[in-house]
Length: 502
Image (cartoon, rainbow, N blue to C red; front, side, top):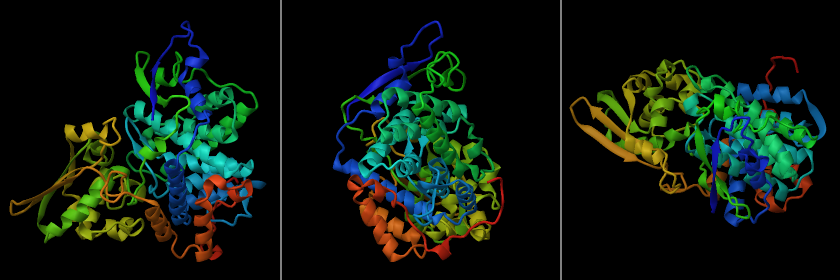
């Protein structure tokens, strides 16, 4: 794919920056640039819709998802959008469907990822684009373009601008991408899209405390919050309203006062107009329900455990890995909660020390059982867990940030030292399910994941209906898009009884 680098810097108010030269406008041009779509891109969009459905249905009865669904059901609308798991006859306002559905997708931390200068889960855009498509009678081809657009904007922002080092949550890249995807779906003008993107960024900046220390359920709600903000931003732009401008380059902008400051410069890649959008192919999903940086290490643990005859004889375990892995999910985070047997699931799936201990002991990973309190509090788990630490090694940080997607890797080296002085050492750069891994995920793997996560929750007829429908995505009518939902067996949907305002 042919990319152009957009130089991004802060402009004092007295130094006028033409609208056409602003990053938000250039992103809007890309979003509304109608180009050919290759079969491999179409296939990957279908894969990711299946992937989202898998993890959403598996999380339907988790408390945060129940609460988000209850809030959405307080905003029902005839001819609105579906709520994952409920009958297609139940529809709510699009922004509230996005709220419920994004929370369901994000809750288990088990869908797709892209890691570069910052972190991202690009499939978090799909529920927003889908909900608006259902409410405004858009067909499968429209939906396809909207999803591709959101991925393109999101991935390229993540390549160029690090939010994490300023402790800003990654929804600040997600929300503009969600707005761009919805605007593409609706075929808006470049000017309308530009205004929506700016508004989306302006209102979506929040701190990374949502992923620090004792991590709460808000981590699951963050993309849902972004989706609501993005849909409202698009609605506002469609009515002719303007937004803070230039949102990236202005004297009092996000860059000037929240990111690298008035002297900052960035190089943001965007596809040349007229060239195909293929960024979705650079992203990857998860085989295991845990932070992406742990995927290769889980696979490595499965391989190494066969060489450990007695885990009680382990003296210590050292993980040599990248800066981000060490400081976000490793001991470099200096979060005591990451070593706490009574920590929340949200905290445990951001603790590579816990994850590695369980993977080594069990030789398997399950989205529920591996996080169960009895697992976290088991003496064997605790004993091994407390012996694990991480350290950053420059070579792992370097390949983590390699601009070549074929060289970029997120693994590490594990050194297990035994009490008798012997060591077991192995390393793995890329997770097995990664596109460049030992066993790359293909359609059959996405469908298998779907079947595993929806087992006993949906009927065989519903399973076949959904898989067959989404597989024909480019040809779906608007009426068929309204049925692009997985309906659970009614008795399997648990409703929480707590009450709020809605």
